[in-house]
Amino acid sequence: MMTVPRQVVHVDSPTEKRNPRTTDIDLMPTMAILGAINAEDRRVPDAVAAVLPQLARAVDYAVEALRAGHRVHYVGAGTSGRLATLDAAELVPTFNVPEDWFIAHHAGGPRALRHAVENAEDDKETGAAELTESVEPGDFVLGLTASGRTPYVLGALEASSREGAHTALVSGNPAAAIPAGVDVLIAVDTGPEVIAGSTRMKAGTAQKIILTAFSTATMIKLGRTYSNLMVSVRATNAKLRGRTIRILQEATGMTMADCSDALTESGGDLKVALVHLLSGQDVRSSADALESSGGHVRKALDRLRARAS
Image (cartoon, rainbow, N blue to C red; front, side, top):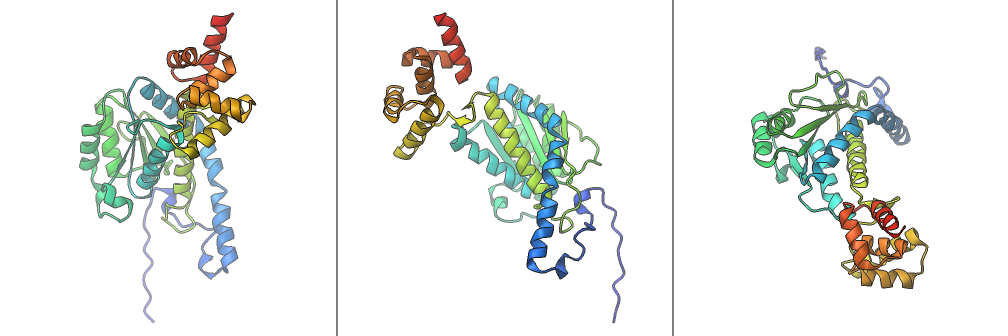
């Protein structure tokens, strides 16, 4: 029998290394396979917790950009790009944000969301060109790459920095140097994957957690919530009207009838109805207080209380 010589490949990224805890995974019964995957997945939240200070800096940059009328851009390839596209898409219905607040740039374009586009992630020049065309001074750009060195992403970040944007990179490779043009490096050490190099697993899970935390924290800081309630929803159909009335009841403790009347009087604007109910002020005054408070319900209430005292 012919023996295939063993090749030793030098890799820098921990995601490319073989995981000593799963070398016999192909011999395991189904429950043991799932148990091994689950055990590795449980390591991810702690890895993310270790980079929260860096993630907080990225959130603050994003909040600063959006408050000033600029945008947030996500840049990724493969799994990273698909996760970024998903997060950007879900912010519009969840927080009623303008569609151009969060822009996702995926190597290979829309087709690459469903099909592999060969060499797209290796095209540094295309990444640079796409962001040069799209980014403006004052924007914030968040790149994502498991290896820490995807050319498309690094080219995009370098170009964005030259255009006057702040930038951050979510990397699964703590050993990689900080690339040119990156203000904040968020290097998450999730270690070797269950299947060597399959970064849609732990590295992808870490990116999903980071993206969700990043965008949600940004929305909270921008006043798109009140307490832990989604109050930026507008009642544009019967289903949403029912949801907004339930949110008003949760936030105020008032009856369904009172909340329904307030929502109607406020033209379906949940925030205006909420400030109106909590402050006892008329709808016009509530809307004005919200506008002068940047859409923050608590700040609007403070303004109205200060005005009344």
